[in-house]
Length: 335
Image (cartoon, rainbow, N blue to C red):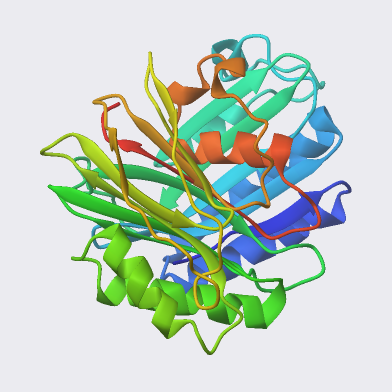
């Protein structure tokens, strides 16, 4: 799966770097000149907003897909002053920085999808999706997914990995964290993903059991797999090592149970647990690069936003700088 690219925005030259990185990405995705131009404008406006209003932040870029359409996700995160009234800020002509006030409105018009989550005094998360071709207005994917997956600052590749198999009756999601950092850790987590992709019709328990044999020649990995059975409205979950997971609804919250161990090396026990899945359910899985002290109810309205905004806000507030990090958020479409 495609992981995130992070560009810190603390001074003006980095706005150009973000634009060049985004354009290089959409070139590889086959965007035509007109769509490339839209991406360049949106990324430039996002970066300039961070410089003007937040005195810095970060832009995360990620390739996304929907059916046959390829696209780019632009996620902007900051801990600046936030917005008192997001709807007012989106109106053309509104400005707090002495500009013409057309930036956010232009970004929304140029994007296939655009959403903002902001808290006064705490910061803003801004999400935009742009596509190489018109995206299906009624996507066939059962789940809406948001992911932040980044390496520790000292490495170019992440030792974490994630994957999903999304089907109408049953979807499986995986998060793996290779032991340590860098290429060797990435090799372990990639091996776990390969086993997952090859054997996804099996149960989470069976896939982890098969991964244990396949990862013996690697460093090993922490690994968790969640299976959402939409017909029976149940989640079956199995985890080994420090992959945290939870299910939330408007009224319920469940932390999912993993056992200690390392897949590929020391595996004392695999056990599959079952939990209820709700029509308004939200599944969050993350590696130990994210602290576990977060509580979604401290973020009013965030659970109703796109999963990428949820993943981004949690990453911004709770990631550990000395570790790779993956935050995977899934919810049913239409929730």
